[in-house]
Image (cartoon, rainbow, N blue to C red; front, top):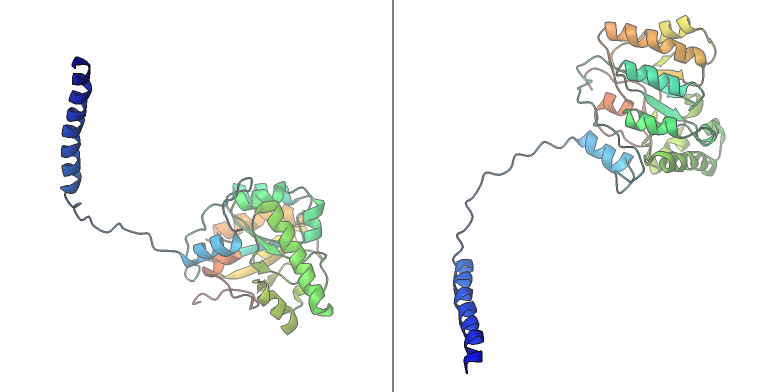
Length: 277
């Protein structure tokens, strides 16, 4: 009989312990109501960048993570969007160094064929440094002279190569030579691409003289979109002069999307931002 005493005692002890636990659960006090947590207002432009400009699943393993968008009201501040077309080229990395030293952001409209021909290190750095990537077609044709399907192919192929290299899906496009029409706009709209033109043309492709490029690039007003090409050495040579002069005059260097501060409408053309927009 003695060998049953210990097991029985243990069972009784376990049962005795179980009762208080059960009662404690049933008598648990209701939690004290707390104040509603404060929430940071959602920035629509920032949200659009994450949802539309970044691939689903952002941030993705192996892709660069962009910094937050600059918090600035370009309807009041002196903002300028420096834009560079036709790259990446041999001098693009040097331009990125110059922009970084001046804490300046820019927008790069990339030609798909150039992306394929060059290492993707420059593109990844553009994303990490907060620059914006735009679509400048695959082979730089005049889109208004192409069929609708050819326009779509030029843009789609470049969209895909940018996305594969960086994880970013562009939401902006610039038609080569600024040549656009209703048909091009319709294709851009269906592909989710706003058309970005300019109001300041440095003509750096024609006049490859550094002081001339710098003078034209600084003849601006707040809200300007400046057209340049990072494939020209003389344009990159002009960058320090441009940045120093415009900084002295109180300008802030922003991307095109930061310039407008809101998602841009696909298919619509934009060439500058008025101060009251």
